[in-house]
Length: 435
Ligand code: PMP
Image 1 (tube, rainbow, N blue to C red):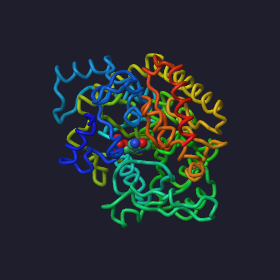
Image 2 (image 1 turned 180 degrees about the vertical axis):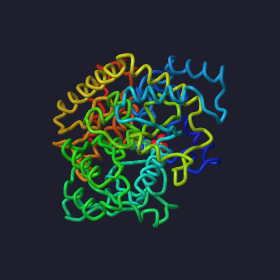
Image 3 (image 1 turned 60 degrees about the vertical axis):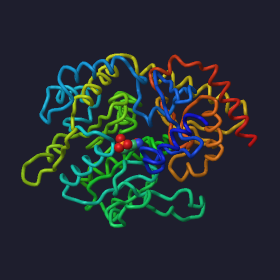
Image 4 (image 1 turned 30 degrees about the vertical axis):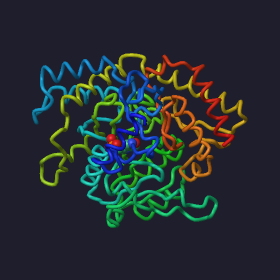
């Protein structure tokens, strides 16, 4: 019996599914228990090591146990404590760091998770516009709260059937009425966009979008579609919220918005801003953010752990490194090399493949063309990808066995053995194609 299966058997007695959150349950045989992590490497409780491209769903941007960040946190909490429920100088310092990298931000507030940041941004948009409706894009993910937990049932949708996928809740416990104010549009579909604003333009508080969908294999909005969305939001007084929880401080210093040169009214950040420490934020234009406050009709935002010193010292150290060093170029270069190696293995096997998104967060799709939206993703060979991923995991490459989750690259990947990766990818592909 492996240590892993022993720990899972015991965990079943104490936690539903035997895990601390649903997505960590990979089945009785494959649920992973980690003993330690360093750089881009994970070691499980049975001593097996992995080069990790999952990186905790994206937060690790420098590497696990980065001493520059860890020492800053240790210094802060041992000298000042973790929280006091009062303001600190660091609050403004970190916002100023973010503003220097992200010209879309005038004012901000902090949060503890991506979900909380999205909730804060949406409430702010509703408070500012005095409207209630919200629109999101098919295939995106904006956190685990009721209103955002509606999705297109893509698995049961028949491509080419002239029907639209059914909208279903993520699971139980989500009231039907939480969907009442939500609309779902499709990436890069101009007709959907015009219809949305044509029918709801005056009641739409905000559109929440990941321009590079970090939850659908980095499938990206086209420049012209995103620009049209920006223009329609401006025209209708709708707040454009760009959710950069995955892309922020990762795909560029200024996130996806820097790559497109298109700015949101409000933006959410989390993950990469703290290299694995739980910190998040939302912010944007001053006149929109100033609706937050204790004045009559002001939007309430807060929470016991908001801007705690563990979170802010980690953000301060991480953002300083991203702003002042060439970490981002290193990450992009490593990502490009990793893509090249994988591409060679796919080509050698005669496999049609397409990479989506930027090198720091790229999707792999077994199809002739890059998917342009979630429905396109459905016709890629995701079943082959799943088999390929499991073979990689068996050989010491950690990733999510679902092609909707991108490959995440951190600074520490610069030291990885690319020759080994090519060999492992080639073997894994051979087995996957034969099965
Ligand atoms: N928005 C996006 C784009 C995300 O990818 C995620 C998490 N994967 C969230 C929001 C929610 O973040 P968290 O898990 O930190 O609550």
